[in-house]
Length: 206
Length: 250
Image (cartoon, rainbow over all chains, first blue to last red; front, side, top):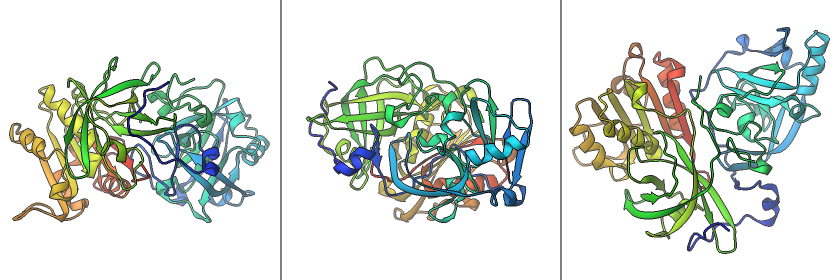
């Protein structure tokens, strides 16, 4: 039993939100911004998104090509490792399933792990199984409008069942890997997988 | 973009409040005894967990204000409107009270004297806390790495660590502290009375050719704008490290 903080009562979430909140999280109605450096602003004319296989084969889409791929919509709760959760966020983008299909036709073979590589140098690792089957997308609208640069626009990875640092802002490439390797925050003390429901915030959390 | 590794598991530890220092009308510093504390680097933060009598718990993150060299771990906490945890830590608690914390957390927004400088720190409001840890560390290590702090507050009375910063810079010609007071400056104020902008960053900061290490911490709009302007002034984006926080129910 942890020590009682004398006089602390807290602001209990209502039963409905309690069920939606992973351990240690609280609900916010804002959309806080967190990133490690300045917001990159690449012009759309220079933007592309790629999937790259182990042997270096690459499937690449320009912004124009990317935004004509079949679009998926998703309404989901998101959970940031800094403790806030936001319910019912609405996104549109291209599912990883769609991208994998298209890449396969171009000879790009998948591997069991991926590293998301972003403008600004940010990286994060996600197992492929956490991106397929409708679980992940590259999102470019939020709440029906183009995604703001502060929130990762023009496009960010969206893997909402993991802590939100895995939903890499300004994503430009998914690089396939044979083995799981840590990305930016995962090398700086954050959990290699990051399941909010198991409260996997930091290295060594079970 | 690289970050230093943090190793090992972060266990919850019991922190006992040894002393409380009132900083401003809304911020206070808790000086803590934390048996087994593994030490930290300036700029890192901790997770705090409060437990109510019926077992209900709430967690938040707070920046460490003390230098690694200091005897006690210090957290400076700003009371947020309706803040579940900050309201308790800025109100109810008194010396002898306990709560849990774990850390240190964060291997990127950190500075040690070994990394050198020059150093340009940009703070808004309680965003000064992790930057103060860097300045305290620099002073404790007798470092003469040239350092400049540009610190924006609404009112003169809201300036956290005001006297300590004045003493620190008076005693050290290689440290320069500049305040921007956006709403209520003191009488006869000759300093900046506007928000941090590009011209101010150029006047107070170092030229890009000096390749300063820059740390920007504060509310999101300030950090977004200051970081963008630093890049626009020609600074290498990889030298601009940011930490943002919004008043989100903490």
